[in-house]
Image 1 (spheres, rainbow, N blue to C red):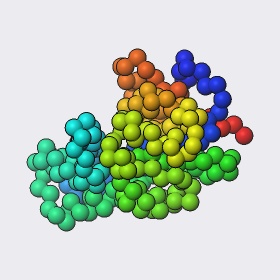
Image 2: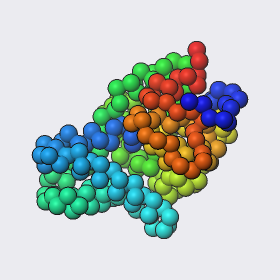
Image 3: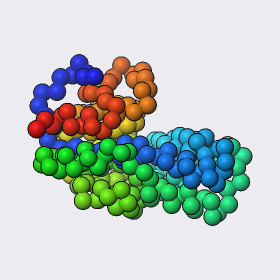
Image 4: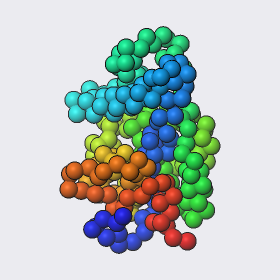
Length: 231
């Protein structure tokens, strides 16, 4: 799907969101299910929802807390919501999973194809750098990603413009010359408002956000990134 805003020329670089886009945040549901039978999927969903909610609350209120802390707080709240007793060992095991989230299966091939085509591909994420680096290494993406840009450097979270500013600053390009890719519809909209060329990877077939704005394109897998960079 192509938005009414025509793409005048191919982007010159790509920035990926990390959580939900390169890494499947709900892969934590499998170990959660092993720890808490029958509640793994619900725990994963509430955990993710609270994690995002807490980033917005802290960012809008200008009360910065590292993403790692908000991830732990989200897990604690999810357990409370489900009335799950969360021993320290179980909490620590699930938090460790955030350092080794499963990548989506097509992602390595896409990143390798971009490298072969000479397209610079980086990450722009809410995640702390010390969370993202082990995730990239675990997935084998560490040689395929540059730069690695974290919201912690500006002590704000997406969709604050201060976070989106990191891309043009690091790459030395105008926002419109950078393709920003996210599987989170709200992130794709925020990046579109900022001025990036955008791709929403809508794996779940979700409806477009009702904000009279749409990304430059909408796809169903990371492979749709390659349509911006024909060989």
